[in-house]
Image (cartoon, rainbow, N blue to C red; front, side, top):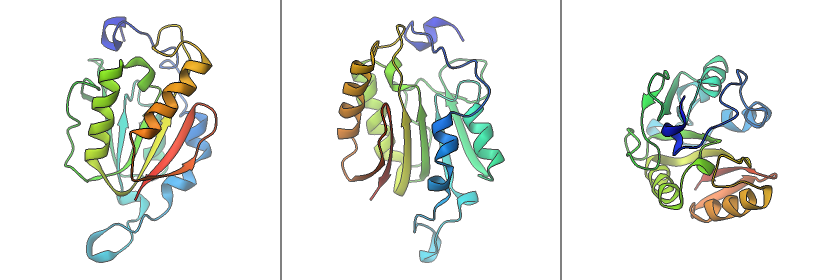
Length: 181
């Protein structure tokens, strides 16, 4: 992955091969029935549509598949990665509105400028189904728009306000999990 694909910012975590600890620690939340499904049936976790935004080397995608999620759609802006080629913050998420049951947004928002963050939040709100669970992680990096923990916390609060109609489930440090009502 080169710098130009991340607005001249480099993600220091893209070289890791294990799913993020926060995702691993909270997998039970993602496997919970959401009450959404055909004919009023609850949606089994293996039939949930999962979007992995900014999938990088697909470590979270692969983890979700190993957990039994059958429909995981990885997306990344760097050509050559295995995910769909999508420029997050500029392109529309190539997904039917209201069809995503889980959205992973791990370590991407701090690499997007303010306009790109707004656009991606709109896209997430558009594609999220009722009961959709959003997992978001941020971290401070000299190569991002949030260089300090304080800037990351401020960004987190700004992002959380973009998800009206979502219930906050967890919110430790620079991470949060929300569920769309």
